[in-house]
Image 1 (cartoon, rainbow, N blue to C red):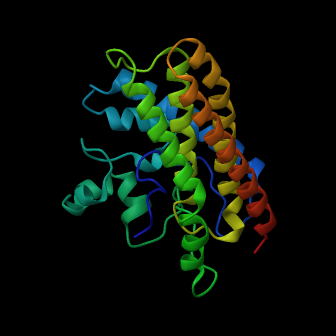
Image 2 (cartoon, helix red, strand yellow; image 1 turned 180 degrees about the vertical axis):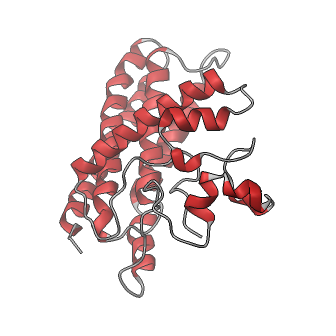
Length: 251
């Protein structure tokens, strides 16, 4: 069975094949396209979501012809397993991704993610899975939670503090995505792209600390602590980016 997608939902536009090496700038462009694609998909879902054949309508609008089904159900392998042979004949999703043959589909393939040799996954986990950046990110979230709990009435973070919270969550999410598991050398440009996004979010978060203090949403002590943590994270991110840039090699 061919893999459906890297994440199981929105198919990527055009990933490199297993023998192609993208640099960080190609990955950044790809991720921007994915963000735009996700926004378009969510808008279509909101507009057509109540239609009886919504998944096919949205798939046609997005150009995802490999997701068109011959039934009133959204494309999922478990559902195809119980479909009748006649229904499968009219299902492009089944023909493209689940049939025994290997048809030319729409280029929706998950990237190869195989270790280069014995012990590579363990070395990755030791070097990056337990990296100090994870501890710093958790400390940062604890600082923000403590600052929020001290607010009168604990409203949802708004103003400068809200912007700070959003950027910190973006930063933590990008770090987790970048370092979550082994990535082969040919694809480490993707890791760099995510780390650069985290670096950018950290810089934006730094710019919200003093305004949040001036608005009375952070105490001077909390603002100083957040500034120290954000600067430390930014330094670690810069070191990680340089580290991965040295590692990139073409297969």
